[in-house]
Length: 307
Image 1: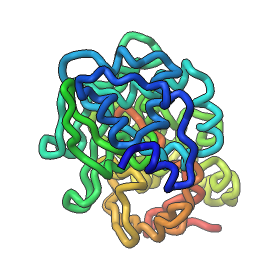
Image 2: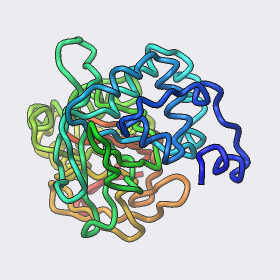
Image 3: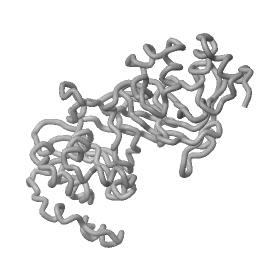
Image 4: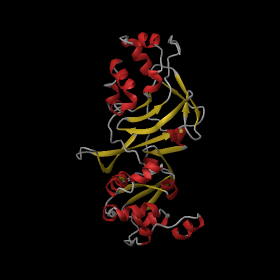
């Protein structure tokens, strides 16, 4: 079935730029993308003048979002992609050096993309994660749903989600240095965990916004204030070793915190919840893992607190 016919059946319009796509006639990665019906991706490649970059000889791995993946983008990201300089960097993040097929994937493997860090000196890396015995494999937190399409200059995998949040903001510790998570940022520093969360070892951090901290009674805050041991224990109960994107989670999964306690995934439908806490901003990729901005504090079970 041709890509055009496939999209008509889906009730979608073929992007005009993709109609102008000119095959190099060599079955390269863009030819493969066209055969797979990835017309939205091809439209953006054309608009951003990246055709030559994707047509380079040699070996490359391209993680190509499906058309539905672009449709499902948050409205804010759809607007962002209208900025062609931003769109260019996002597309280049989906282009990885070297040929990596499914059987070569390893959990927590990092592959160098062609998208540069903000310092314009180093390249962003795409993290691959394997969940549930290989039933779910993600790249940059996005599920790979169609593997190993061979091209003359590399290999193509299809994603069900655009990798729109590259790890451009640094480590797990650096990400929480934003206005809505100041309590966590100071808590990690006071608990002596910032340095640990800045290293290469992957971590998942569940970071409550400032709101639940501000709502605590003075008696509870006084128990924490100046008590570095208590602060560290509370902070450790928000950190899990390893990278757990929401797309790798299933209902009733349990994750063990650095404190040794369990967090349970309550729901993965709509807004993911863990231990009854909603994710305000999920899946913020870090250079060494992922951060989920949440709505509740995960207190240690033996911590005497008032609420």
